[in-house]
Structure formats: structure tokens, C-alpha cells
Length: 441
Image (cartoon, rainbow, N blue to C red; front, top):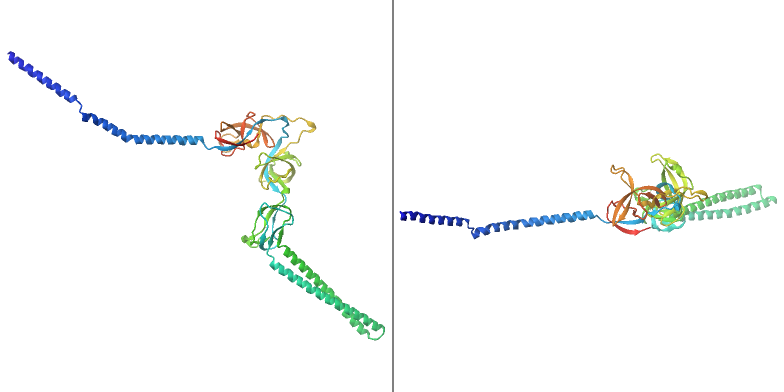
């Protein structure tokens, strides 16, 4: 019984040991199987890293583009300083109007006859004197006509001389016949014949003298026609346009259509320059003849030109509801050119008896620094701003415009000493980066 009882116990121990070995075998990880997952994860990571790098580069490029757009291009500007207005700033402007420089004496010079230009002796910008030759036409035909007229005059004068000699002889014959009649040596008929011959020759001579006068007139006419071939300056001035070249046909009536020039050039008397402005008829009562004014050319916004009102044209434009006003320039300068844009400030009269001028509110800035914003486009409400420059950027500051004093204008809403942009360019926006150019004040 004891042997029988031991055998199952020994068999049971061997089976348990085998089961534990099998279980441990299943838990053991093979080296090949251990490396396989790691290799698969590495391959997946190797396949994904180009995509991540490309995405990073795209984000970096978008960031650079956004930075560049936010940076914006630099706008070159000129600066001016807002200054405190003094009571003695001068008379204020009661009205402003825009217009153009015009010339009272301006002419397009042409020939009085149709002909071919042989030479043109002018260029744009050239100063010419009164009577100076500007161009010459081909005069060969007119030279021949003049020579023919002179030959006819010479022939008529020669015939007149011949008749004068014959008349002198007839007078002598008549005198001899009268002497013979007194001595009763010839009949009275001989005397009558001599007198008839004398009267006939006298009439012929008188007729021929009229022919000589006609021939002289023909010569003068041919000379005038020949002189028309020379185009001269009617007055002293500056050539502002050259309209024709040598070899072209010129005609005062444009006989050849598009192939014929009607003028050689345009001459302007610079001493006759003045300003014409259109004033709204609602404010024309503020303008009087001889009223002082100041002109400001668009080309030279810092140059005040003293002026005065010449006349108010006594008619209104019903389409524009304006009245034209002529303004004279008190200073002549070569920089003032015809058709330049100009802004005219009509000034109030200075106080009489040395009365003090009223104080000027706010600060003074160049009139060109004040710009209008908003309004008709349906966006922001209309207003006026100046652009202050701080740390290289322009910032819009809302102001209230006041009186105009020549090239300066009083404004409220900013402080004295502020650096503002003079004549802001159209592309200048709030917050834009600026480059400071020439400075003033």
C-alpha cells in the first residue's frame, strides 16, 4: 500500500513541473519578436517626419509673409512743427478759392497765307523779342510775282517818260503856230491842229501816270505777300509750344485738313500772368476789387505770393453757380507758369488806427497738412485730420480747422511742438511706417 501510495505522488510532482515549464515558455519573449515592433514604429516615424518638416516650413513662411504685410512699405514724408499762433499773425482769410494761372497776352502765331515752311527758328522755352523772325515760308513763287510787278512798273514809267517828251514837243509846236498866226503866215487851222495834238498827248500822259500808280500798287502788294512768308513775333514773350516743322504746309484757314498746320507756335507774355478763380456765388459778397489776397501755387506750397483782386467778372456760370474773379500777382517770378494750379486766400482788411488783432485759437500748421477724411463714401463721418509721426509711424489725429493765414492754418485738437506730415501723400494711412525726408520749421 505504501508503494502504491508513493507512485501517484511522484507522478503528480513531475506533471506539475512540466506544466510550470510550459507556462514559463509561453511567457518568454523571443528576441526576433521583441525587435519587430520597434522596427515597425521606427519605419512609421521615418515615413512621417518629411510631412512634419514641410508643415513647419509652411507655417514659418506664412509667419514671414504676415510679418512683411504688417510691416508695410515705407512712405517718404516731409515734416513740419505745429507752432503757437501769435496775435500778430496777420489778416485772416475770409474766403479761399482754387483756380489757374492764365496769361492775358497769349497768341498762336501763324502765317497769313498758305505755304510750305522752309525753316522754323524757335524752340519751346525760348525767349523772343517783338518782331523777331520765328519762321520762313517758301517764297520762290512770290519772288517771281514781285519781279514781274517791278518789270511792269518800269515799263509803265518808261512809257510815261515817252509821253512827257511828246507832250513837251507838242507844246512847242503849238507855241510856234501861235506866233505864225500872229504874223498871219499860216492859217488858223494849223494852230488848232497843234493844240489838239497837245491836249491828246496831255491826256495820254495823265492816263499813263495812272498806270504807273497801278504798277506801283502791284509792286507794293507783291512785296506785302512776300513779307507774309516771314513769320514774326507780335510781342515779346516765351515760346510755350512749337506746332510745326520745316517742310510742313501751314495755312491760317487749315485748307489741307489734317495735313495742314494752322500755327507755327504759341507765345506767352509772362509779364501778363494773372490768376483766374471761380468763387461760389453764395460767397461772392466777400470779394471786392483791390482786396488783398495771397496766392499759393500747388507746385510750391511753402511760397506765399502777395496778390490783389483785379476785377470781378460781372456774369455767373449757371451750370457751376460760380463767378469768375481775376487776381493780379504783385510779384513776378520765372517759377510762375501758365496753367499752374493755385489756391487763393482772399484776406480781410487790416485793422485801422493800429487796433490789436484778435488772438488766434489753437496752433498753426501748414494748410497742406490738414486733410479731409470720411464723408461721401458712406463710411466714417466727414472730418479733418493731421498725421503725427512718432517712432517712425504716422498716426492720424482729429483736428478742427480754423482760419487760414497764408500758407498756415489754425487748428485745435493737437499741441504745439507736435511733428506733423506736410502734404500727406494719398497712400499714407494711419499707422503706416514713414521715412522722414526734408524737414521744415
